[in-house]
Structure formats: structure tokens, C-alpha cells
Length: 322
Image 1: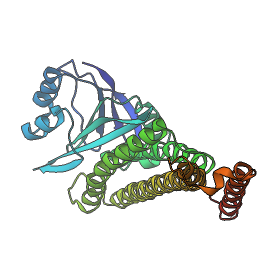
Image 2: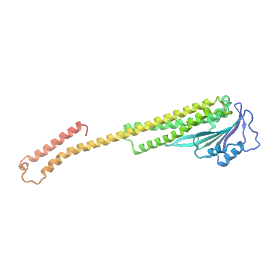
Image 3: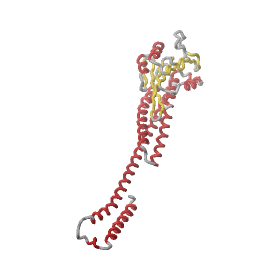
Image 4: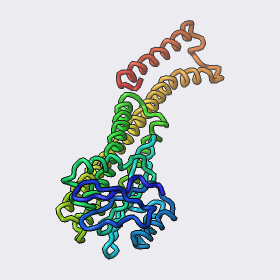
């Protein structure tokens, strides 16, 4: 069984290791509690835990689900909590799962698809016996807080990318790759926000859940985790607005560029229309055309045509069409 750690605590201090493979290992007693952490267990290993700790089958079914939504379920004297972890890989947010079973004096955490181990959380708690005395409720809070703290760096990194592209959009036209990148980031943020909604509901439910083995002094801490989730959600909403504004600015600049090109083409077409009309007129096969017999006719027509073209060019320049 992929056990990260299985330890028994008493009065806030680590008491001993829990030997899960030994059926004769003495049970957790009195005011003691056990924290068992597993990493990527298979179905048979979860079934072994179910048999030993009498876990509810519906909670086990949720834990074995490939991508459980964040949720809190109460089954008699047991609580099942599912949360989603997240990390940024390139322009994609990759999700993992962390599930927790809470019994009277046991908490079992199962981590899947996450590179952030709970070792730091466990070490920090073991170094603070005063908070560890609050039991499994505080352990659950610490794990959820650790998961939610991993959300903010994702938003910060995406924000830096978006601001860099926004500055580049003001200096030059966005390339197709830039637009595709922005679109992918916007989709990733939309999916991320769909995860944060249920996660906020999990924190609100835990804050008001009343069970004998959940320390009431710890439950307000879940409100703090919910506040963190809301801040991340608000930051995502702000980023989506920035992405929309970048798209609008890029589209506006593209329209301005096309409009400028259209005006330039129209101006040159107007200038070229003058010699086209004049030379087309004198290209007609009429016998009686007095200008044809005039000695300076050719120079006069060419000069007048050039003068008109120069006048049009100057007019278009003043109008900023050229």
C-alpha cells in the first residue's frame, strides 16, 4: 500500500506509527487520533482500508471516482471530503484530487495526480502541538488550506503572461500564436472557475457542520479557506476581463490597420483615375480632335495631368490618407 505516513497523535504530540498491515496493531484509544496519508492507491488498497476502518461504501465509491467534484458528504458518524488540486503546465491547468475520510478518531487522506506532497503540512503541524490538539478537524483545515494556497500561484503566473501580451498588443499587432495562446488561457480560467465554485461550497458546509469529533473552535478556520477561494475566483474573473479587453484592443487595432490600408488604396485609385481618364480620352479614334494638331498639346496634357495628380496627392496627405 502506497502509504506516505500513518501516525497516531496524543495531546498534540506524535505518539507512534500506525502499522496498517498488522491486524494486531493496538487500536487508537481515548483522546488519540490517527492521520493516515496515501498516495495513488488502487481499488484493492482502498478496499482494505474500508474493511479495517468500516468506511461507508458510498464514500469509497466517490474516492475511487477518476475526477470527483469538490464535495462534502456525511454518512452517519463519518464525513467524506473531496477537493481538487491544480497546477499549471504550459498554458494548461492540470487537476488532481485529494479525498479525506473523517471518523471519530481517524482521518485518512488520499492524494492523486498532485506533485505537492502533504509532508510539509504534517511537519508544520507536528511542530505545533497546540494546534494539533484540535484533532482531525484542524488536520483537515490544514490540508484544504494547503490545496487552496496552490491556486494563487497559478493565477499569478497567468496574470504575468496576460500582462506581457497586453503590453505587446499596444506595441505591435498580435500574431496568430498570441491570439491562440490567449484563447487557451481564457478556456483554462473558465474551467478553473467551475472548480472553485464547489470548493467554496465545501468550505461553507464544513464551517457549519456539527459533529462530535469536529472541534467547534476549528470550524471558523474553514471560513478563511473559503475567503481564499473567493479571492482566487475574483482574480480569475478580473483576468477574464483583461483577456477580453486584450482581444478587443487587438481587434480594434486590426480594424484600424485595415481601414488605413483601405484609405491608402482608395487615395491611390483616385490619383490614378485622372491619367487613366485623360489618356483614355485621347486614345479614342476620332479624326477631329483639335489638340492633336497643336504643337504643345502633348506637353500641356501631360503637364496638366501631372499637376492634378500632385494636387490630389497633397490633398490626401493633408487628410492623412497617405
